[in-house]
Length: 422
Image (cartoon, rainbow, N blue to C red; front, side, top):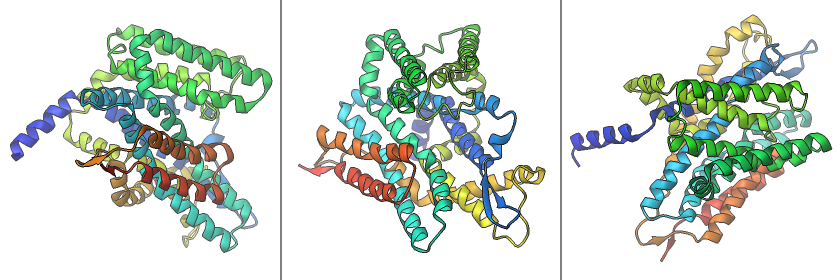
């Protein structure tokens, strides 16, 4: 193929692609990194002991900011868009749901495996050299907190072919049932005071938001007039305000994340509506080649950045304590002023890490000629092995046993999904 033909094909592919989705996904990843940088403060107390704090959450405006900054619903909706289009493309090429699930599991398990290996080694060494167990628990809990995403996202993506079929057959009924079930789960949790009941909303809330991505993919949101999109967002935020005012759930949308609650489903409606409202100017913005390169660079490393950014932030914060001059006190004016420098440092380190590791994220999942794919039983077992360690972190927090189990579990999942000889 000539260079000219390759360029023409690339431009044709870009013309068919919704670049706004790429931009929004990249922006979500960057926002997560920024939020975590602002949430972690490390310094010394009056006795010279290391203390950790969460400066961002101490701000009076933090709860209100989470109504905008909690972007996980949008990320799941964008995942729904990607799953919808990928599933339709796979079906046209003759693939089935087993092919789809295998591809989704590999794209999550392969990048997660080195992280769990790193945690297993780091926690084992820290324990062996006698690091204060209380401090180790705090650090491990912090760096492992984003791993909940793997379990929730994998669950939603694995059932995307089923949910697409329901969307095609009964789009409104599917949304209504998922939302009603989410409401019932939250009501039972509130009445009985049992937080564990909320785990059922890993299905109902995140599947609901993923369905919104299907609606975005098939053009329903784009067919709405601007005033209708604004009305959707206003109604969604109004319902969230009513739920919060009634005292049923927290005004902090981060506290409503695990287990997920109805306000996140409503946030998803508002965020997809607003993204659609801004689609035209954002699409024009994405015509710039420079921005495209940045967005695609982030997109090709999105999972690696997400998985590794928090350990890097913690490492940078810890190393700053070794500097030969005093570090700014967390939440002080100087601390806020130095956050852009920390952001650049964190991104630089994460991108260095991503140079070898992003290959695990972008490696092809196709089956070479002369090989066959794993059967459905192996594929779903691998999905369960990938789901479990992240689910364990979400419920019991990261520690050495979970890191070791996660390493073994993810390694087994990747091995199970290897192509096999005929």
